Image 1 (cartoon, rainbow, N blue to C red):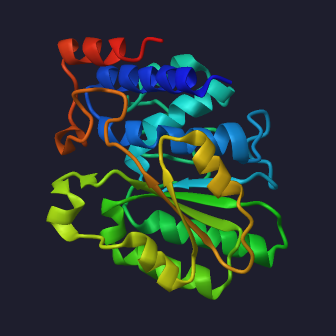
Image 2 (image 1 turned 90 degrees about the vertical axis):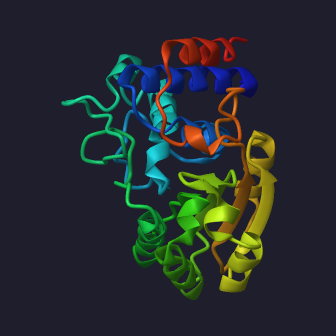
Image 3 (image 1 turned 180 degrees about the horizontal axis):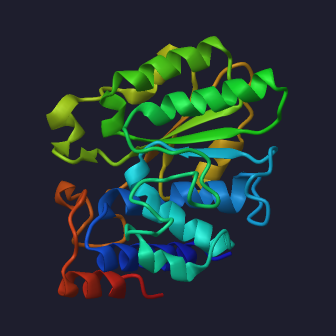
Length: 265
């Protein structure tokens, strides 16, 4: 598969969704695209024809506002028709502004309140250990989200229970709704923090699918995994890149047309 081409196709779907509903979160949806692609196209055990397979790998998109990227990939795999994407955030649509596992095929966990996905992922991984199941659990965190104490409670528990079936992936674009991480509340050396909590830590370019896959597949025993994915908020759209103002702003017609033109192969 030509991943550069596929990434542009998926980003185009995200832009169409967000322009149609005139709401949502473009910056963080675009920044985590390659992280999700690495998981779904290369790593995760999943079956669109059997989305409730008890042996499937699980994804918890803790930064739930980035769900348009996930919806685009699920539609690409056939979990639901691509035409459904046009109904994002509409009344009666199964595609809500944050993931809902009771409505959308392929969603493993409801998220939205930042910080909670870390504990939810930890719980799923712990349940797999107790149930002697072989599935893996992947949790995608936002960097601003890591200012929440619940993330660190989950990290402490994950290491305590030696959850080597759990991977935390950080979408580290350096920006959040109110500005940069450093301005709002610095994360310091986030890798050293997770290392101190007992994780096996990796540091990668979050837009390099091969590098992400290598880290995801690296063998780890007796401890959870943390992958710091360095990304660009608004990746792929020139006027959105590294701009915190595009955390949750709608596009006008001119901006949409320019953004979409930049996804042409």
